[in-house]
Image (cartoon, rainbow, N blue to C red; front, side, top):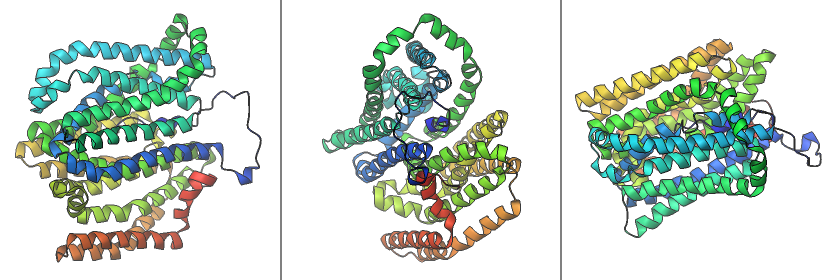
Length: 513
């Protein structure tokens, strides 16, 4: 959801190991960068495939209220969890010496413990006001799990970056799969045993996080415990605390604002409507974000590195144009199809109970497409060293989302709330994409041509599905034909547009985008 990707920092050089692998001719092997990205993407792909495959079963075992309870719990913990290390986890990647990195890691763990302990009295005081505001008394028994979840998620953040520094990308990949298998296995096991509740979903979520933490942490302790005992000192921890103090001073607030802006809809939907509505919303968002985060995040990882180099080579505008074109090709037809058949699709795949979640997806789909395009392009504000713009966008997101859901809540219509949410998101992300692309120096004539070409190529298939939906052909046939439209579209694009083939090159050959 809101946790910042650990992969944006993979380009930071690490200390060279003593034993180097035998050299292979450059022409016959993928670059280390591409191989690392491929390793990470593989783990993410497997984890998300597991989640997608099991979702139709889980949604038939657990009702929307259970998903709503889980969404509220994870929203509360994610707001605190994102700053559980006070953003010092980023500093683990920066020093040249492993000794200093070890001291920063220890600093992170100390901060996580302190924040987890300090949260206990605050949560004790705030428990009743929060429960009353969210109108969710069933959340009360699980409040005691919030400090534990903060500790696990904060520790996991520090372990992620320590493994990234050590280039243990395969271990990071395995940790994602362990998380997904543990969480989904627990949900299915309890559901089939007849114990299907929101509490089970919360417990499964925590167990998944723990599985990731153990997968990353145990090998670290096994391999480096003696090194930690020798090199971690009180002086080193204090020096690290002072040296990288800009992270808690500045980045913490931006991260908090970004995280809260993502959780505002969940809190306000619970306040104005019900946990059932929150459950519909959370499943809809999860299904939108699964493929888009996977594809957009993977492209962003490589784009960030390419754009950093292109800025100094004078080709930044060209790189941005090519990435924009690639995102348009990948996203436009699936989003148009979701806009047309979202309700029917969710009703058939997840069960008739979830038809309304599909309607939410139909409302949010165009916003999701703009967000999908903005995800890789948003890294430009780091490339262009314009973090103030990023803070401005996060502030706009927070304010507009708050106002949108609030207006819908006052009116008493969840559909109006989500429509305003979508429109405000289209405005904010559209403004961000336009501003960053303009600053990157793109050729707007080429951008217009890309937009027109892809809209026209998407029109025949999507138009056919729209006509069939209007004349009320049975939903199962429309979904089957939609899959055929999708396959035909991508087949046509692969043959007619060589830029789509560059997806393979990004991951394997590391050629130009």
